[in-house]
Length: 192
Ligand code: ZN
Image (tube, rainbow, N blue to C red):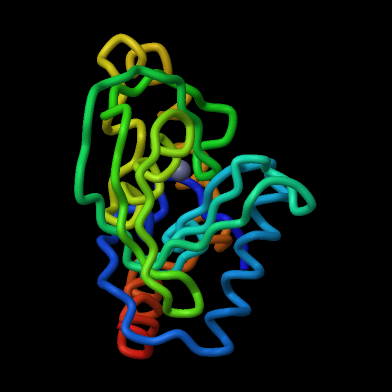
């Protein structure tokens, strides 16, 4: 398992709700935490490891022996309040940062890995991470939501990601679209 980079097809996939959790999926979640910590990230959505599953993991401390590890399965935002502008980054677009406007406070309902219903009302960085990760599950990236001026500042970097992706594809390092689509369909058939 590895973190896929923009503009990989799966990052644009809108994930369907999960219907079952099994031992394999628990193992997937554990590996997602490991990858997130290796990359010094605070959140990682299943799309980012090439899985069409409606779940994400997060830990604001960005390290395993600190902070609180959270798993959100089938998360839904039920309330949004206020507005704030903050700089965001993404493990699928390393080294790229930009300002994004979002609601400051959100209420989120989801399920834990144990199937327990969770409801969280939060603001600040946690609200930011939750909204960024739920966007991933809908195939939306933070560059889509950047302010116009922020986006124009990183347009060259975005093009570089696109160029490098094409080159990696030419070198056979990325499966062709048909293979990716087949893989996503197989995982959906198993879990959604
Ligand atoms: Zn991201």
